[in-house]
Length: 206
Image 1 (cartoon, rainbow, N blue to C red):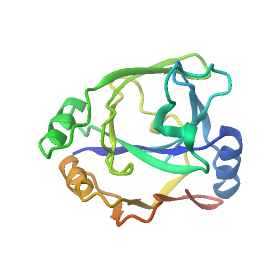
Image 2 (image 1 turned 135 degrees about the vertical axis):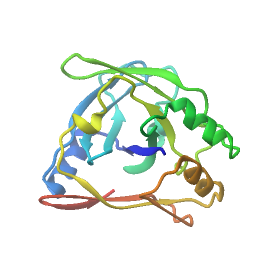
Image 3 (image 1 turned 120 degrees about the vertical axis):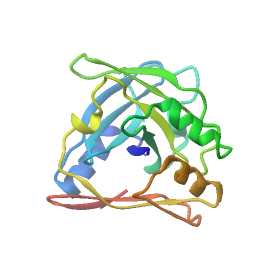
Image 4 (image 1 turned 90 degrees about the vertical axis):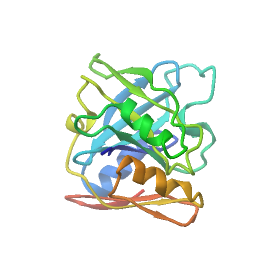
């Protein structure tokens, strides 16, 4: 059974977004690092067994050859865009690929990725990028292998109170069922996904 690995929250600038999360919850996401060649960087905060990735264009990198991840170049406002699912115990990312293909969803082939943390440690993982995402409700898949999951190393203190994905694509529910995912509701399209996160100082809705 797959589990939610992380939520993807895209913003124009990391600093102001981290300020807002900290002011509302009392917990500040920590800089995660840059994605070399992709023109983006991120900050992370643990949600317990999963984490929140705040991603933004990286002003210290040159303009990438192609679009930045998740279409962040075209965003007018901060947005919760999608999420990643990872294999559960005794599963691999390849098992999840087979499960999705069994219900007619092609998640793409797993590919190797990397980024360097601010303290110089290089992290490695494998992920897929599906061609169809049902407005972001169909997750991409990720497998950290021997690399520690960021949920265990990012600042803690936040939890998910509610998580709602919005789509008009009826295939989304069957895909989540095939992965064995729970912990999130799928609603008819309203134009916005939402996550309500709570910390000791209060809550924030993304």
